[in-house]
Length: 227
Length: 392
Image 1: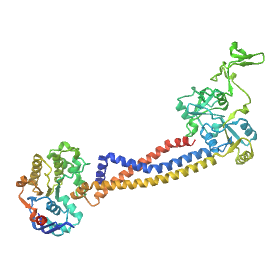
Image 2: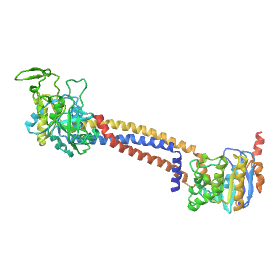
Image 3: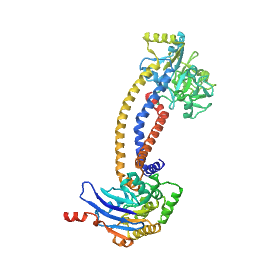
Image 4: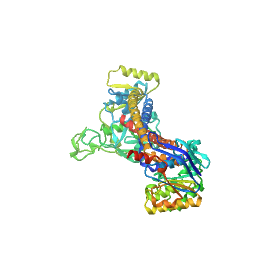
């Protein structure tokens, strides 16, 4: 499903370097990416989702080579095929729960906003236990509820790949498990590929495979040299 | 476009306080030069219109502006009055029709205009109800004056005394309202028209009281013989002219000496007008004749100069305010970086974010322009009377 080949990435003016000779992620695989803060976990997610472009190497998503696409084509692809869940939820304060969930359909005409979408959004929100809070604004929701809205926004487009950047880092264990259960069951039902960055050792048993980003970055060497 | 507008609208709606503040600030920045320009232009046009419809004015020598504004807008004159013989002189010259104006008195805040029926023809004033004044003690109300004083035909109004301690001044006269004029959209709407002789009654030049020869109470008389009787101050003058007492009203002295604040002159033709002006220019007496349009045009020129200065200042302040607003918008975009990045990461189409931001600015600007337009219209409706009041 997703292949990374000879991918090299570094930030301008920084000695940090991410080097991935080969990484294959299969359809409906659940992959956890771990490692200490600052070692490149989010960078890897950004490369897979096309938010960042590698210095060299190839990233292939279902036979589509991302480096051959324009920035807009990558955005379109991301919108259609991927669902993104962020650590800080990244909801728009001025939109209601329903409008936040329907945001992907408003920001790009490649997805059509019609009555079916509204029903789908309502159904996804209800499945998150937020059916009675459609018109609420994020400021009036708890942390757990906000993250559930964020998950609903990612799922409403029926993505083939779900990319999550520490989605439970700011949640208590009850809310953490609830969110992970929702994500797990969605991925199981729809054969969706799940790629999740996490620090949380307690949840690693939920994944098919775990990779440590230290195996691909010079983070350790850099810190040892600095130390 | 629809979705960009939706997001932009939702943002502005959610932060309505900030949005309203921005809209009002921009509206004021636009309104100050725009409204001022409109106000002065409309005010000047109205001033000139009334002045141009008034061919010539005769009054005592002094401020031409004072005489013009007093005659056109019925404000109590701050220059001396002429004698009525000036009207008689103009009549005898037969070069035009003189219309006297006596403007000394008020009913509350509404001016009493002592004049003749010729004034109604001259200004083309139409009666909405009732009739014109025919006898002493009757008056015709301007439309707004009737509204302000809440009087109807058959009612009455009482002239206000000129001063509580002015023992030699006017005394209150109850006047019968016999007609109400249709609204003309001019200062005539605010006035109460009466015959000039009635205005002289108010001034005390004429009065009515009991027949002294019939008085039996000697305490009311200082002296009495077969040929004359001298009343004491205890004899009260009538404060209302009625059919029963109208014959007792009489004028003391020569009516030619009685005061007239201004005389509107309608020359027979252009030549008559020029001749009249020539005669007044050559005369060394106390009267002057002026063309109100020329006087008001000078006043309007001054207003326009002041307006231009104020507009210049407004534009400079406006540019500074718009620079600050641009900075506020830029800062707002910077503060919203995380939100805009989220949209970009999720997959916002090319130009979507740009169009959302542009629409937000556009909605704010268009709303501000609409509000400033409405303020300008309001200014047109309520500001012109203010400017007239201020000038006069």
